[in-house]
Image (cartoon, rainbow, N blue to C red; front, side, top):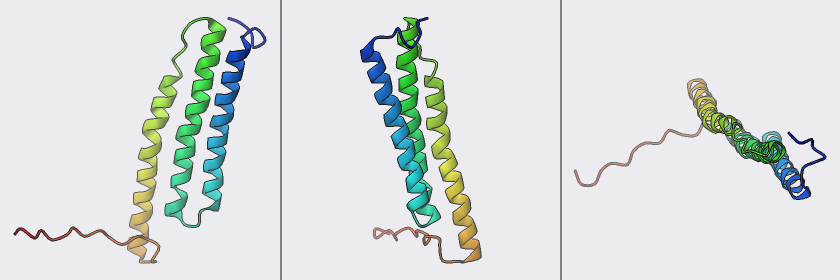
Length: 122
């Protein structure tokens, strides 16, 4: 395995770009979390920042370790799969719990219930 000083410059530039892009996406998600006014708006930004930010960091890690070990290193894909699967599920669970709470308390923060349109053919 090569040290970080022995990898080619183009690999280092690619890894740096992916790490910075992932960190910026995570930062944008964090800023969105702080800036958006309601819970329902606020919950969306961090999930996108987390998914895409982790994706950039994960790809950077894969490129670095593939170059440093001189073989394909793809075990980081498991991290990406788990984050991609668990983040939206967590978002939906939090949103549904908040929606239920707000509707039970009738505090007016919850969006109105969607009623199905009556079928005009019957």
